[in-house]
Image (cartoon, rainbow, N blue to C red):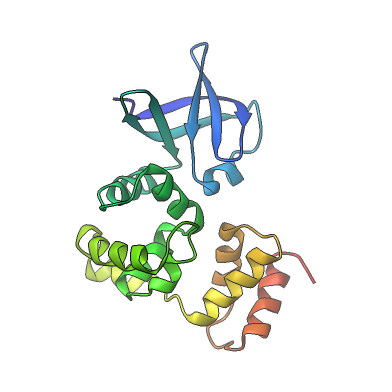
Length: 194
């Protein structure tokens, strides 16, 4: 129904934006990755959107690109996963990290998402295996999510960095560095902290 929205940001909330389009302010729920990259009020933004129609409300969800939107729609197809949980997944895990976790059957990665316990993570894992596209080429390009990496991400997010910042810093760490403390130190240097 509404495939995309382009307009000026009127308001930035904790989980949504209000985007002005033709004199109308649309409240669009977005993942944290979008909120962290919008810039500020007054900036122009373009979002790929998904409209959910319920008896009592219309809710619009927005994403930075078609890939994120596609993944959101795949997540909605999983039994027991509604739009808020799907949005929480995309706010906590990058699409690459999610695919990596599913490909390698690492339920602990999914359990980092608020509101997802062990059973839900296992059900998600089982159902997403059939729904996500894992060609040989994409499987090779999916990064490995090791327990050490999970610990580094946990430390960085505890220190106040976003999951996106933590994952970006993690990609800068050489693979031959194995110790958690050393990996955290390198990540902090990348993030401009000492």
